[in-house]
Length: 208
Length: 94
Image (tube, rainbow over all chains, first blue to last red; front, side):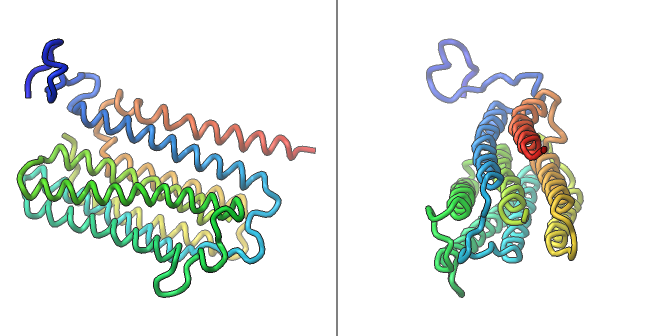
């Protein structure tokens, strides 16, 4: 790593000078926040489109289309909240230099992501009982079905990429190739996934 | 680097769990009208999202500049949604 100068800026990794306006936040952290803001605006676009379509339709759920399962999804919401806690505990352990403890919390967080994705697969396609797609909620058949699948699968893609991100960071952590600052950036992304789900759960599942 | 005590993380976790249970409770509340239900659900969701942002994402401990960098862009879709709701309400007027 070298100090940034006009000559060195084009030669790979540099220590970007901290901006006093942003306190101790690193350039990586500010960059992650800006990425999350742009991602949040993508979700906002989807949720606003959902609201416009739903508000403008005389019949939202057509006969034969199943209602969404609130209790099961509340369980998935609780699961994501639990995984957010394990992520902050991983970060706390990482800042204290407790490497094995941090690795264990990261592994538990990844498990939370995997369980959430399994739950979403079950909701769509069914594992121990028929899923929504077999119960009559077919993508493209109605705005109700299409908006449901687009919004929840877009979120599911974030859970998937977040889980992969956790597993890659965990592997690097175990090899001693990463530090607490990177765990913090990973945590920002994972908590964002949880935060967005809180809104999706309310607007798509709970509001009648 | 911002970090809060573990007890605070656990307190926020319990609060989030209680708010989630409240959300489900509101949906199953017998006889509740649609408008207060929607208001309660949106309020609970915003409270939960704020808890995650402030405590788990440590926004509470960041500088004013970073807080504004995050909050101002995120207010714009909220404002747009409010305009849409107001416009829909206006169209319903006799």
